[in-house]
Length: 42
Image 1: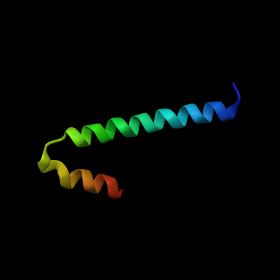
Image 2: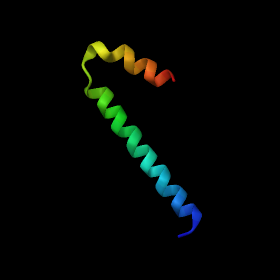
Image 3: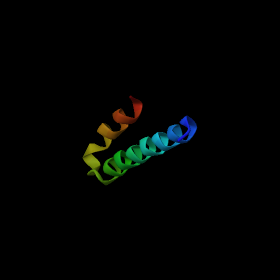
Image 4: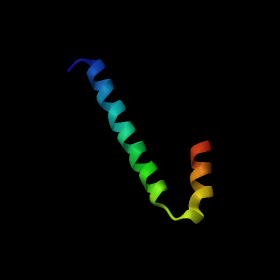
């Protein structure tokens, strides 16, 4: 497989992991909102 394709795949995987984290944050109780904001600022 050529490197460009491989690069794209790893990028997609990374994005999917980000989305998973976002979902976790979104489903977290409201009192954890401050935590998620500090997570975003990092």
